[in-house]
Length: 128
Image (cartoon, rainbow, N blue to C red; front, top):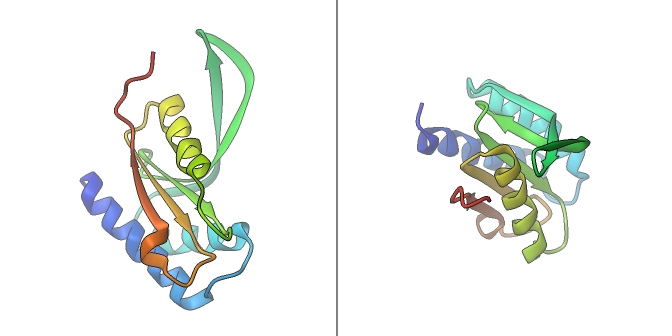
């Protein structure tokens, strides 16, 4: 399955969850609902995936957790905030760089205009 095909199913899942639950809930509720919906779409999806962080080739023995990893290649970062800020975009881009992933989806469920709150983030692999 191509990234575009996977992205289509991710977006479909986002709309399904949003239409069913509506805005204003906690992020972890949307995360669990998204996991169910993505798996119902036939996608391999895991949530709270631990990602280790290296600094200059040294394992820091700590890291972060990706909200959802789809098909082992696309990170979905879920927010339920008043407004998506530039730092949210940068956060997902950092996650993509640290995992050498190409594509991420940033979604804010706490909105009345979902279309403007689904952001596709591309990593150009320019990490040094």
